[in-house]
Image 1 (cartoon, one colour):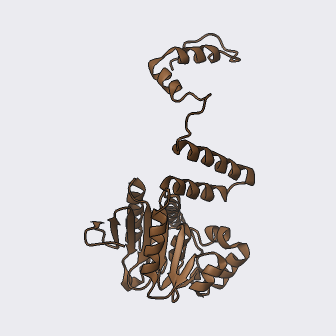
Image 2: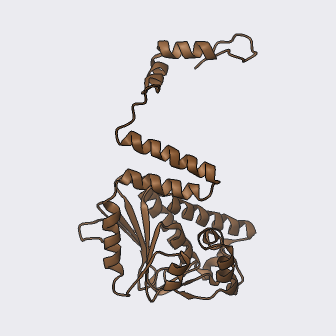
Image 3: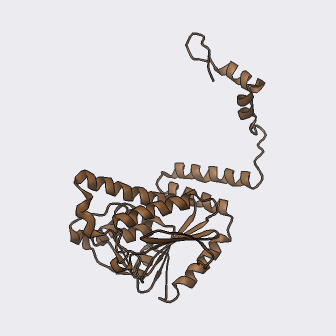
Length: 293
């Protein structure tokens, strides 16, 4: 995916690189199974923000160093989070991080090898695609530490696999094989242990071949539509269809302004004066006044 000429940025606890339209974040604490320490989490927030700011990146890949994806939050640091308010503040930070990842206007792919548990599994659930090796294992073992998930382990999971299976995963705390995640609809594909990179490269090639504006719109309306009632979701689909027609050349609607309204406001031209003259005091039940706009 990356080459020696790929643009890189130095971080201490993760590796970040850009190779043309593809960015890659590799969690890099293999001695701790890439557990999300406070420091690593801060760098992950910064890396995601960099991807968001880019208009050239189209695909983001997230993986882990040392033949493991991520073992979740660094439990050894939890007593440093502070009192109940401090814990809520940190959980909110993690929720914002996952929300930012989910809302990126790029396609995100989690490439999972080894363990993806707790916070590691929550990262995968915020991604658009998940490809895993056959030896990968996943689960939410927080219950056996006496804590509860904070940024997707109950919420996103229930939306992906339903409340009954989410209860099974969280209340039992078992570790499951990768194939089970695909069966449940939690992940997309399982590949042989030595085929993760080739499969990832093939998926990225397919994604980059698409009309990227259509891809951005599809991701947006799917993410928002699933949280809305049917009619609201259909409204997103309808507006997306109109935007697609516009960017494909059909932007000139006969009874639209074509930008004339904005120009008239800027120049205080006749169109602006006519419209505001009609509307300024209409049904206002107010004495005449001078409008500043």
